[in-house]
Length: 228
Image (cartoon, rainbow, N blue to C red; front, side):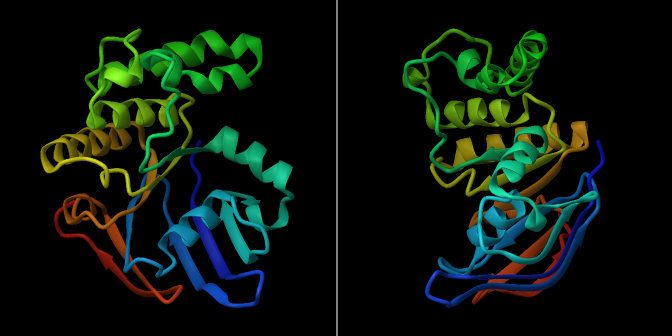
């Protein structure tokens, strides 16, 4: 599935009316790797969540292919997200009582029974591609880098065409962060997945095709990376 991104006149206000995000236009081709940087509170995560359809009260248009998330109700956005978007968070969000494979294949529990075996196999393949082979080992014994790899495998198990990441290396030391960046970039490029990552990590941002800078809820720079 190839889903270009087309954002037009995206605006988001807080419940008290404060303007949180004002983005006249943004587009991206399928398979693009895009970084988002900016100071804390600049609106980076707000933009990421708007692209995921996680926020109400958005105005304008956020189109992935022919689907405009702004026109959908919360149930429609959740359904689109489940089918189309994988998400990675800074704090991993794993179930401590489960092993690596059970965590990575978690979305299979919410799919029709006929799809579950294939999704579990896909989760195992992603874990192996990310260098994890101890499928049944409890994630409580995993390092931070290993936990984030499980989270990436979970986000990519359903082969969603879009991957959104919020500070994916922030909880890792430098060595683990660099290894994770190498594995993540290699995997998304191999699959043709669109990756949009909010990050303060210069090493991650320099591997992106483009880097957006957000300040005060506005896009102030859109630069092509020279190191991708």
